[in-house]
Length: 326
Ligand code: ATP
Ligand code: FE2
Image 1 (cartoon, helix red, strand yellow):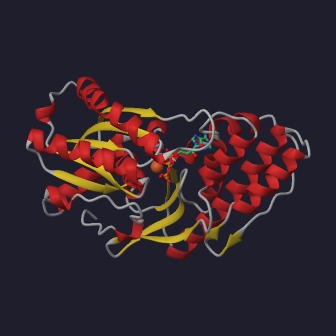
Image 2 (cartoon, rainbow, N blue to C red):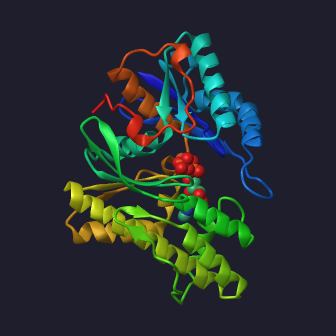
Image 3 (cartoon, protein in one colour):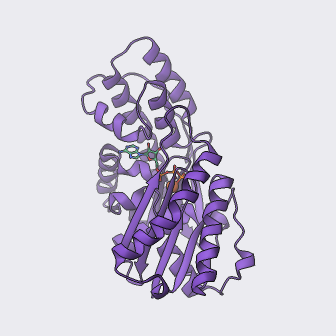
C-alpha cells in the first residue's frame, strides 16, 4: 500500500510518498522565505498553490511510481494558517477525486510524532515536540496523545525566529543561531521560565533583545539563548518521563534538528537509564512524508472518510485526535 501525503500548514508545502513499512520513497518540499517580516498567510497560500502540483509530480517521479498506483491521499488538516490549509486541502481533494482514491485529513502535530515512531521503531515514548508554532511534552494514554506540558506563550521556534529576524538573520533563524552559539563563551543570565511541565519564552525573547541592543557579543547571546531555552525543555521532558514512568524519549519538530538540544536531552535520558530517538533531519521539519505515514495508519485503522468530511481545522489540537491505530 502506498500513501501520498501533502503538508501545507504554514511556511512549507511538501509532498511525500511512503509505504506500509514506513519507507520514505519520496519527500520533496518548497518553503516561503519572506524578505522582510513574518509569514503572510495569503502569500504563503499563493506560494503553495503554485508549487503543489509540480511537487506532486516530482514526488511520483522520485518514488518511481505513477500517480494511479498511489492507494491513499493524505493531507494536513490543521493546526495552521487558514489560507494555507484550504489550499492544500483543495489540492488533496482534487487529487483523490481524480484518482478515485480515499482521502484522509491528518493532525500536523501528531504527524510530527508518528513519523518518529515509525522511523525509529520506538513503541511508547514520551514525546518532546519542539517546532515553530508548538512546544509540547506528550505521552500516549487511553486512545489519545495527552499534552502534559506546553508553552504558555510562543513556540520555541517562533522565539528563535523572532530573535533572528530582529538581529538580521535569514528565516528560519534556528540554524544560524546554532552556528553562532558554537563560538559563544559566556553564559549570560536570561529568564528561565518553567511552571510544572509548562514553559514560557516571551520573557527570554525580550531580555535577549535588550541585551542585543546593549551590544553584547551575538555569539554569547545565541549560546545563552540555547542553553537556557533547551534546559527548560529538558527539565519538563524529564519531569514528564518521571510522571508517566516511560523509558524512552522521542523528539519531533523542526527545532530538534539542533545538535545542542539533542545532546542535552540525550544526556538527561542516559542519566535515567533511558534512550532518546530522533528521526532523520528532513523528517523533523514540516514534510509530506509524515502526513502520508500518519494518514496511512489512520486509514488502515479507521472508517473511510467522505470528501465532504475533509474540512480543515485551524485550531486542531493534539489531544483531539482519536488514536485508532494504537
Ligand atoms: P509547527 O509544527 O508548530 O506548525 P512549523 O511547522 O513552523 O511549526 P517546523 O518546520 O516543524 O515548524 O520547524 C521549523 C522551526 O524549526 C523554525 O522555527 C526553525 O527556526 C527551527 N529550526 C530548524 N532548524 C533548527 C536548528 N538547527 N536549531 C534550532 N531551530 C531550528
Ligand atoms: Fe511543523
